[in-house]
Length: 192
Picture 1 (tube, rainbow, N blue to C red):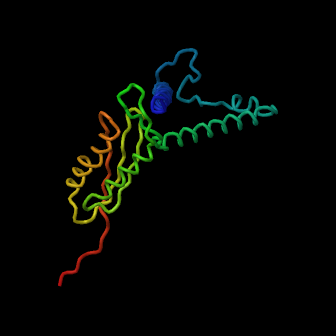
Picture 2 (cartoon, rainbow, N blue to C red):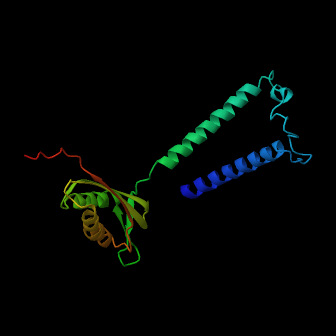
Picture 3 (cartoon, rainbow, N blue to C red):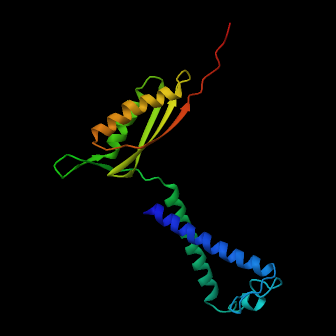
């Protein structure tokens, strides 16, 4: 839901900016604007002195402006944190075959994935995280590989063992995964 809201809001903001910018550019290039358009030529300014200072002396003007701007800043910060935060999956729905289903704690499955991935040959450190919906989880796995390990072999081992076991044990039709591989740093070897 957040992804859809994010795309709709970004699309609307982009559409408004493109239309307004295109209209101002067209008027600046000499296109004759309609009578209701607020700007009538290239020399026209967005806010005249009279428009800028109309409510300057009213007691309600500045508190209202500050409140609206503060609200916009708070909404922008909320939106930013909602976009940057990756939600961790709390539970996974396991099909038990009787139509009821069972709930498996997401952290338990993450722990098993992490432990099994870390036991693979050549993996120095592993970390797994589940995201998505509880009926369709997705895994994000980070592996730090030892210097001698071929990344393709490590990825093949992870998909055929740890991810396949997790998918089978949770009774999932599929378990999509995003895997990030990093090589462990090591000192140069001395040749004598």
